[in-house]
Image 1 (cartoon, one colour):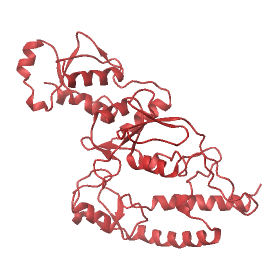
Image 2 (image 1 turned 180 degrees about the vertical axis):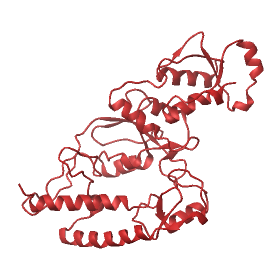
Image 3 (image 1 turned 120 degrees about the vertical axis):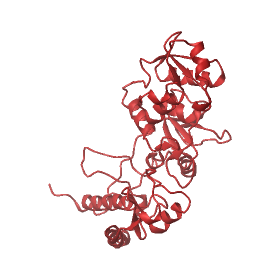
Image 4 (image 1 turned 45 degrees about the horizontal axis):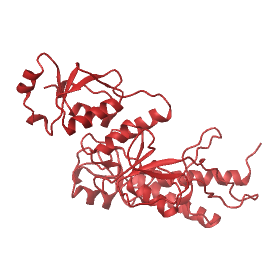
Length: 333
């Protein structure tokens, strides 16, 4: 059976919407202007990346060290952008659409991806012959959001704010470490707990968008990708997918340890180990908690724990922030 005019139109506007996002600068979130590429293979607007490099000498997407002399104009990408703009303008005029509001969709009937429209809303024109067919949106699901600002109140159906991060928390809202670095936050107790619990960790602009529209907005472009110390590891997404798929593969499963001291910092790391599936016992590797590894009096600790392996807490941090068990050697005291 041949596709109808409406189905053909739906395919075209889905493709154009996808192209619009692929041709978008991750700094200003607009389509590229004077597209400029970095040695690490990323593309930005010329003005955007030059302004960024005047303050920080590394790529805002992967943290690869670069400077302005490493930049190269991407004429082919800019040519595609200009042609795309013409196509988009003609299509928007003909169909009275704003492609920035159109969800990206796979063309297969079996596959769908998260749509860039609020849940429980309809983004479709009338479904008469020759017009665009109705867009199916994701089913509503209750979400429990942890946010530091306790003054906020939610009037959004199926969204509630919670006072602590637990296995029942679905979303964690954090501020970016720097507004120029999309998807990067500072390491914090909340961030580590969010990963261990498999939360959807998003930046605060996601919640602002939800409250503005009074609807649960798709999280994808707001998801946190990493933090300032270990970079864009993708740990939040890895732990979240582990939770969603029901694998229940705890990060520290089988790990047995004890804490060198009983102070507040040690109690915090004991909590991380337990939530991650590890066991606190009277024997095993000794976790040493101090602000800096260099400040630890290793000789004194070896006298306290003769013959036992001393492991600096930084190993716990890196395992959580990468969501994998990393080599311990550099953390052994």
